[in-house]
Image (cartoon, rainbow, N blue to C red; front, side, top):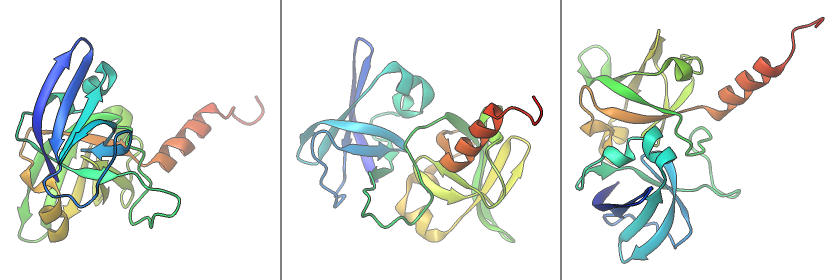
Length: 194
């Protein structure tokens, strides 16, 4: 995790500066870093401070422009062809935001994060399928209408900002890219006999 240390606006560009807070990865200018799940480019680097620029498309689609100085964010470097993949394939292309319904521990179910999603995104969600919430690759425990539930393990709660989420908070969501590709292909395929 890192911390937003500065933010500024110049015309249509919003710049956020993230303190990497001892993160061992040492990105260089031009590297792609997922910040709360949104793929951004390092435009400047000063010590542990990383600067990222966002255009309006990014700020309108994600939660990044609304985060205050001091907000904790999840950081992840881009995978390479030689990288061991430990989760599902994530592109850093946030489709929409979702709203936290609850984020708490239940005596009989453990820690459950429940999120209301958009109708557009909900069609890609299936039980045991994948979703990225603020850049964290997760398995969906349950889907009901336009909501999804995720069971969070202690390791995830300790190493990400997900434990800080409260009812009403907005989160960045990215559906599984394979589900999106299959859906797009099916929509473009004409029905038999046409």
